[in-house]
Image 1 (cartoon, one colour):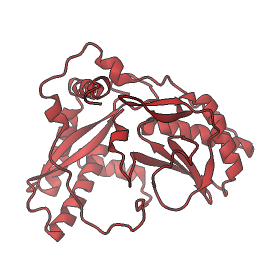
Image 2: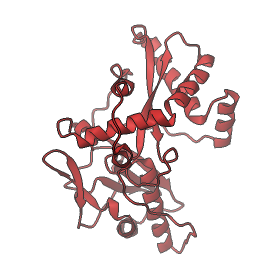
Image 3: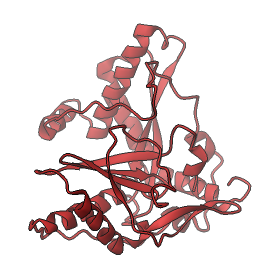
Image 4: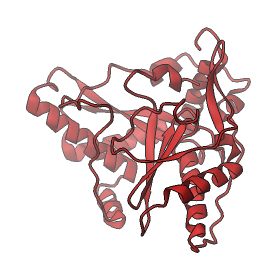
Length: 299
């Protein structure tokens, strides 16, 4: 597990999922729903421990707590105050939030967990769903798929690059991150991507890239850069026929030269995504990622 290595005083590898319901949240009922969901998703009823060579998850016998959200997005989880759980469930008004430590699971696993919490919570108010939220084995697919495989010489180069492109802005005085929320018609978004002959990922990645480029050109910080590299997460489950609840994602890179025109960028990003998500290339990343876990010197 490499996520704890990147934990700092101010940040953790956290992400947030949220759900809105039609009435104010009852905190006690939500806590009961959370602990019932953990009876089904036993792989999340854990605490993070530090071993000699690596961190690992161990069974957590304590009941999970639900608290009112403090309004500060993605502040660090105080594991001790959080009864040692590597995730946090909070609420405010009619909103329910799940802040998940990425070392435990990725978005696909966390979404299933949140859906189970919601299903149980709503049933307490007489709202029942026929939907079945499936659990799956908590299997480390990186180790399983890399068994007996050797690392290619080009693997490290493919997964590393230049320093991150810094977007200058005003920092908050307190921990946390700011949010910009908006509602968009998903069908209209799909049509916009189709009009540029790209998938949704390439379309949104290109828009995000040029938002940063234009901002950087205004303050003059882009002129020294030859290109902007995008790090794009890829869910590996479909490619490798897996349904694991454990982390099973990787990161691919797509580059935009500073002289690339906006309309040209869509197809260039799509071409790179297609090339980087070929199964052989993804397997190279899987084998290298498994080395980070298996080699005690690297750990």
